Amino acid sequence: MLDNHLKWENHVTYLCTKTRYLIHKFYLLREFMNQKLLPVIYKALAEQLFNYGLLLWGGLYKNAIKPLEVVQNSMLRVIYRKPRQFSTKELYSENVCSIRTLYILSVCHFVYKNTGIKKDFVKNCYQRGQAQGLLNVPFSNRCINTLTATRVYSEIP
Image 1 (cartoon, one colour):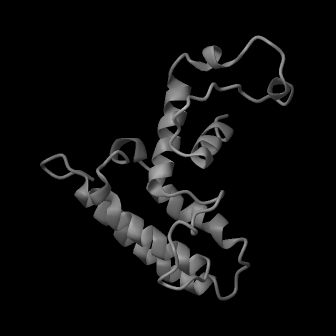
Image 2 (tube, rainbow, N blue to C red):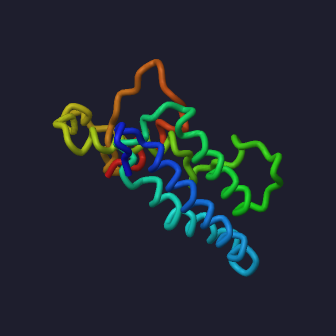
């Protein structure tokens, strides 16, 4: 959803309203559903909303995405039964990613899929990773986050 100035504000507000609607659904679901199943349902419902077109709008400034991050944090607090003042850093685990991390993952996946760098990353020598069918990726000295880099390279097919 774009406006006449080619801005993504309408899309972000649309996602906020859809996500707020899901918060109420998660209030109802958490009463009778298993605690381990709620993040799976979150990934199926909410994270798919965020992923749609994320390559286009995910690189917005932080203040443009901030309302969506606030709604996402409140949804995760509902899912994990945490109080309102609970730290947002502790909400995200290995299974649940923030919007910015989802954007980084989608960009890395897009670059990997659409460029010819696959053969450059694979080394010719035999290593333990090749025995398990893994891809050997050279890491630089500077990384965004060790957890993010691990997720990025583990989710590449």
